[in-house]
Image 1 (tube, one colour):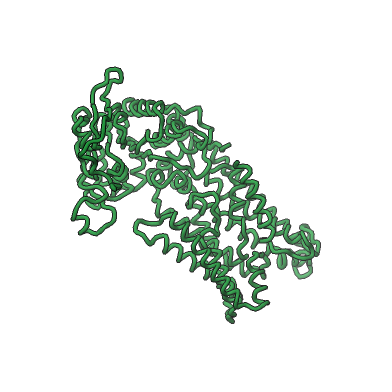
Image 2 (spheres, chains in turn green, brown):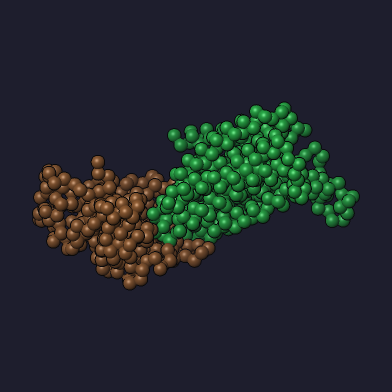
Length: 340
Length: 278
C-alpha cells in the first residue's frame, strides 16, 4: 500500500522520521562500542570525576571502539543515501551505489597498490585508501565521459550501460593484477574486498569527511527534483526542473560519496539497496522522507551489522561485509517472493 | 497567449545536409494559440507533434525562430516561471517508484513552492480540487501503479491541473485508452477548457477525437504546417488525404454533434510524411 502524503502533515512526518531514525543512529553509535572482549560500562565512560588517563573504560571507548562505530555510521549513511540517489537517477529501485563502476575502480586502485607496493603515505594515511579513491575517481570520469559522448546531455541508459561495461572490464583487470600477486598480497586484497570497518583511529574518518559532507550538502538539495524525475524527464522539466543539471548533481555527488565510503571501509555490499528498500516500506516513496531516513537508518544498520560481525564468532572479528552479504541474499529472495 | 514563430529544429546531420532537403525535425512552423482556445495538432506518426509540444513547453530550444509566451521569449523565462504558466501532460507516465495518487498530484504544486518549502494546506486544497475536477477524488490514497489506464491518465491531468497554469499541453492523451475512456477524457478536457478557461494544445493522431473537442486544428506533415485554422475549414477530405494518404469520408454527425472522419482506403499518393519512412 502506498503511503499518503497528506500535505498538511508532511512537515510532521518529516520531523517524526528524522527524530526516530536519528535516535536509532545515535543509540547504535553509543551502544555499539560497549560490545567487545573487555566489558565496559557507559556510565563509567562518561564519569567526569575520573581523569581520562585513569579511566580504562573511557580509554577503550574513545580510542579503541568509538572510531569503528563512527566509521560504520559514516560509511553506512553514505552508502544508503547514495543508493537512494542513484536509484532515483537511474529510475530503477534495483540500482546500487556500485552499479556504475565506482567500487570496481576503487578495488582496482587498491589492488594495484597492494600488489605493486608504492612507499607512499600522505600525512599518516596509507596508500591503499588513497589509491582506491583515485581508482573510483577514474571510474566516475570514464563513465561520465561515455554517458555524455553524444550531444544532448546525460543519457541514463548510456550511463547504466557504461557502468556495467566498466564493472566487467575492471573485473578483468583485477584478475590480471591478481595473477601477479603473491600469497600475502592476494590475502590482503581478498580481505580488503570483503569490506571491513577496522579503522586505525579517527584520521581516516576525518579524511573521508570533507567529501562526504559536500555530497550530503548536495543530497539536501535533491529530494524534490528526484521526486519529479520519477515521473519522467518531460514531466519533470514541465514542472520546473533542470533535468540535466539535476542528473549531473545526483551522479557526481552519489558517485564521489561512494568512492569516499569505499576508500574508508572497502566495498561493503547491499547497504545501498537493502536500507532504501526497507525505508521505503516504512515511510513511502517521497524522497524528502526517504533520503534522510535512509542516511540515518543506514548508519544504524551498518553499525549494528558490525556488532553482529564482531560477535558472531567472538573473539574473532569478522569483516562486516560478510554479514551484509549474508543478509543481502535472502533479502533479495524475500523481495522476489513478495513481488510475485 | 502562446506563439511559435517560424521555429525550426533539425535532428542530427550537417548544415549542408539540412539545406539539401527534407530532414527529420520541424521546419518553419508558425503556430498561434490564443487564450482560452482548444487547438489540436494533427499529423501522422513522426510528423513532429511531440517535438512541437516540447518546443512550446521550452524543453527543447529551436535552432531557428522563437517561442513566446505572452510576448516574452520562453528562453528568457526561468523554468519555474514557465512551469507556473504552462503544464504538460506527456504521452505516457512510467513511474519508477510507488507513489500514491495524492503525492503525484501534489507534485504539480512544486513550481509554486520556494526552494525548501513543504506543501501547505492551500496546496493540499488545490490538489484535492484538481482530483475532484477530474473525477478521481476517490482514488486519493491509492497507489498510482494499481490504477487503470483511464484513471492514470485522469490523475496525470489532475497533476497538471494542480499547477494552476493557464495553458495545458497534452501529447496523445487518448493514445492507449479504450473508447469509453476516450470519451471521458474528451469530455473532461472540454469541461476544463470551458469552465476554467484553460488554454489547451492537444497533439493527437485520432481525427475523431480532435474533431470532437478542438475548435482549431493545425495539420503537421513531415515537420511542416500543411494547414491551420478553424476545424470545419481544415478537416476536409482533401486535407486528410494529403495528410495521411488515406481517402476518408468527412461529414457532420448528427448524434455526435461534430465532424467525424471515416477512413475508406489507402490512396496511391501515399505518405510523404514522417521520420520513419521505409
